[in-house]
Length: 405
Image 1 (cartoon, rainbow, N blue to C red):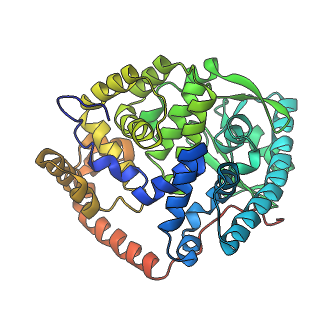
Image 2 (tube, rainbow, N blue to C red):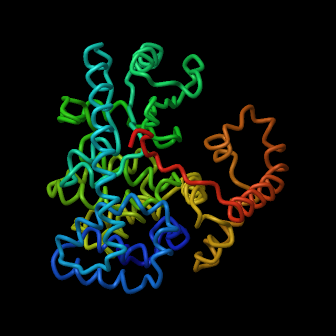
């Protein structure tokens, strides 16, 4: 983060959003080239005493094809057992990518023929636009932003393509609809780019700035580069999916692919969508740990905006941290290196603002507020017990692999 007279409140607390030092070394091994990439790869291999430790990190296996490609590119020597695992993961992802792209082609061509305006998001776009090979970017599902408020026609089209809805839309109140293809591939139909209404202030402008790009061999609408970067980092700040670390690779490659990225549009979007605080954390990490070339003036303006974040923006940033495994209250308090941050975290835990409860908990009408405040400690106890249960008897992670692969 740029050095200023004061760090933004919660700057250290929100470091829980970021990869650990060991994960950062893995990311360097995946992304850097030449001597720096080779040194990072060798250092990461040395810090892993047992192959079993690597295989236990299911959420990181999606990086194996990228890691395999980087090891080959940088001449990193790998022992036979792990090399076999990396090669197998890469071949498997190549097979999966073919099926994934075929289904994407069916979806995009069907919507285009029907004349329904959609925007394809996330993995399907990034795999085709910023990665050297689409198979290097594991995509868990297909994400589509729908322009029309009524999803009924889109639902019918998806049903004709052998997608089964997991729940029905409720008139105009829907936010996203989840489907699963007969192959096992999930698809999500989004009404807005982000889950929280507070982060969707400029949704209409996304369409006016959208680009046309060939995705899965079909011309499709995609977010502009600055909007894509904001979307990647915004999701990383608010969803548990950040623990796959794909967001770091996506952001790193996006900036590399678009060296003349319109940073003013990114800053404007961050400010108007109330994302300046988490974006300052994520972009500062990319600069410090992965040498991403982001203009210093952009970071300084972002730092200033983050320092002026409202109480609600800070509370929602903490809510986003809570989505991940490093978001436990004890961890947040340990990371808070000043008394103001600790007081803010404690207040948010036990007495969040009404605006926060309205925005996140959808606490309406206002007379319900006392009941929410009363129930919060009990809810924390239940969540703690559930976390302990999941740690002791972990359920099998959802990999998103197609059943046909």
